[in-house]
Image 1 (cartoon, rainbow, N blue to C red):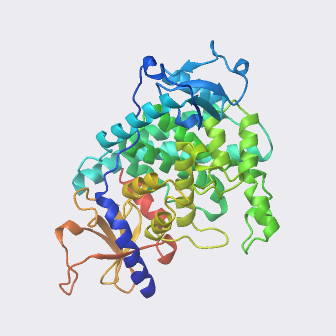
Image 2 (image 1 turned 90 degrees about the vertical axis):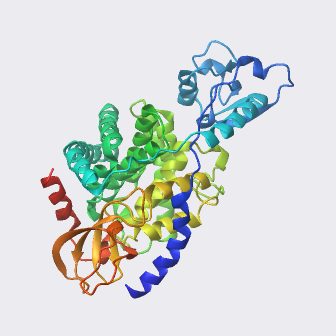
Image 3 (image 1 turned 180 degrees about the vertical axis):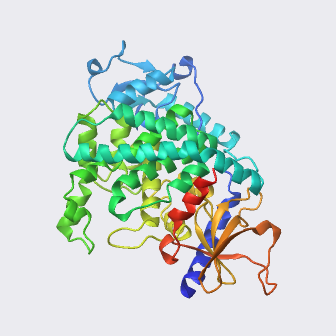
Length: 447
């Protein structure tokens, strides 16, 4: 791990700057109907994910008679009207003047609206909150795990899926995350290489909801985002499992087959269960990229909705930190560094910065190595000093297991030789012989 330490330190320099980064999430402002009159009509094509109140829709990507609206032009005045168009269309043409008016207001609102900040808690308060929330989180997590396994089998058999059950479980996850997302984070650390696709879908759903909370999205959008995450990879059940689980490198033909999972997922979701179009599209677009070089369609960035962009980020992050049949997972800091390098080119630049800011350099549940060689698990993050979290030390300096001992780095603890303890790098879960599942079971047992 010697070389890994210097590599990780260099990554930290790029990541730490985000801890003080204060961009704001998107907001919408209603424009009056009169603001889009008395000007030359000029239309602009936009994806339905960018619709906002005040915009005037003058053309659809399908005949007006296919959509249950009364007029062949509509100025958006409610979220219901937006949802209706999003259900039936992938893009629309709007009056460009109304777009410029709303977009200018959105930029103004982004400068004014504060980002979500988690309340400052003492380590003891954080511990109590975690243990109080753990039973509810455990119930929602276990049900989600069972449900997604059943759903994946139904997809494989081309059977009708229980979309209402999916919505109920996502709602339960939202309840838990709105109360305290830490419990869900801990549970999502339990992983099985043999059930990667199902567990990956649950984790992407959970982390997407948490990110949406950080962006201060309303509950309705959190539930939709969670559903996008949980269903984004269902198309992999249509890919031959011997290719999906191949331990060695894929051939060019095999890789082409794997990439078809985005199309297969989209087609399945469109044809089964009356699922929201934005959920279907997230399955279609989560491997599309901002530079237009993603797959399967090389879609231009302006046609990717916020849901598509969020799922693309979370999907990539979870895949990077997870063990796969063909490679080991990387540490959280290295994964964040990879995302950072891809901002603007592969991923939405603003969302990447906010995601890194949310996850932080030392995510809860991650393994870290101290300057004396000991390894600890991050129990909670001190909001006023994010580089000095509360740890549970689990090994000695020789990486041998010890009886766990909690330390708060803001208290500047020292080792037996009197040396002040500090973190030098984060570790991948596979870099230390440590039974994380048993550790989490201990947290649950104390709940």
